[in-house]
Length: 630
Ligand code: HEC
Image 1 (cartoon, rainbow, N blue to C red):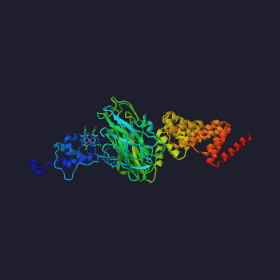
Image 2 (tube, protein in one colour; image 1 turned 60 degrees about the horizontal axis):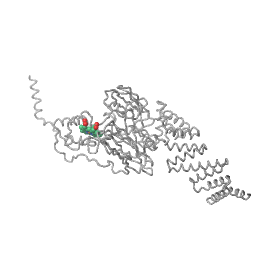
Image 3 (cartoon, rainbow, N blue to C red; image 1 turned 60 degrees about the vertical axis):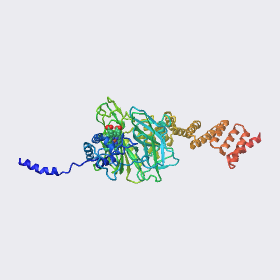
Image 4 (spheres, rainbow, N blue to C red; image 1 turned 120 degrees about the vertical axis):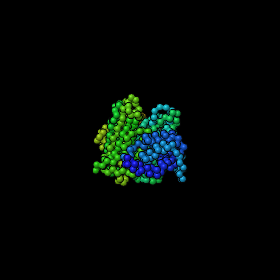
């Protein structure tokens, strides 16, 4: 009994002297959390369904806020803490979550406004200031009221006449309530355009591959997600915009219950400072092995690569579709230590995004980077789009699955190391997946750039075998064969590319060129003419057509077909007006056809244009002699 009494005496004074439980108030405790972590999305014109910019706003949703913060549904933040240190991290601490719980239990009191505290101000227009150029979509996308999520690609030309350096772009969704995520992909080759059924209409598809004819990789993640600030390129990392290039805006849309018209804009910010640092986007993936049986709870997809040089990781972008669950990316350094790049315990496509590291992570040469993605194709996965579950394969539609881990890396060695890095990565891929389309194609490109046409032809041949429907691979194969002097085979490849895609003007140009090199004048002329129909301003095509017509005329002249030769020379003069040599040749053709007077007129014209033309002078002399003999 005594002991208990003592205890009471010991305890009670403390209790009676304690201050009343601290009053948790909105202004003092909750506003700083909400303004920083919620307001970027919960404000007018942004993605969230209501604003959290005042006491009244917050109080109105208090119980809901307590619920969604406790479950960590809000703020949306996928990475597990301690596994990668990211800028723009938006994650509440346990203490903050507890504070919100207690505040709501207390009835969500306001307290007194704190001096100097105000709801955050957000620019209502462009966040990064007035853009140098604003790009609009040609045709808004009409999103139906109901139905599944939509993945749409807008193709947006960049109207510039000279090469410019871009330091930032800002995407304005126009309609953020239905706009979930967007990626911008650069297309310098027109590959995206060729995927449109109607020019300007855009096309569907979740993940986009742009086939480039030359190795010129993009080093930037150009993406938009709700509440994020526009990505600015770091000092020295501006990227190149070329005349004629397109930006492809790949957007993820969710129907809102009413029909919506979607017409996003892109603001472009230029700089005078050209690129001096060359980051590269490196991808881990093994989509080829994705074939997930219905009901499979834990299907694992892995990939890895070894760093051939010291690299700094600047940002990571993990990506899967609806079945992705636990997603891990990490690096094993040469000394065996593991550095986490990212770990996402509960993947949710709706909140995907690019994660920039607070400070670059150095991966010394010899480091192995690994990706391990787990997929859940069982009925227990609430996000499974198929009920009952169905077998799911790799592919770029929303009903297919994918697993990508992209890293933005910057080699520590100065200068442009991209081709070197790329070659080592692609060689590793080919060891693992000898028939991989992308790896063979890229290797072909690298070999062509190195001047090894024979090796390039072998790789492009394999790429073409892996994807016989790729007009680009067939064309590149042709180009490699052409530069190796294998004209007949090259011609076959270009014809194949055009059979796949008759509107592929570059392939038509290549075909015409190889026909010309093979002295097949008639088909060469026909194909150059078609190139000019498709691209009337193509001065190289008109120049080549002029040359081909002259050669063709020469061949006819040689075989005694003067009249026909004359017609070719006359055609050639359309492309080479006032060319003394062609007038001279026309004179010779007329002479051969027996039209001596006309021939004389033509030859005299050639000599008026170019009094020093020896062939014209000699032909005229012969002609006069012939006429004199008559
Ligand atoms: C990255 C943008 C973003 C941030 C940051 C964010 N929200 Fe949200 N919030 C949304 C979106 C978008 C929705 C609509 C959810 C949906 O449609 O799935 C939403 C929905 C909600 C809902 C309604 C949930 C429901 O069940 O309907 C609450 C409550 C909420 N947010 C509270 C918060 C709080 C509190 C914070 C900060 C601690 C926060 N949000 C931070 C974007 C955000």
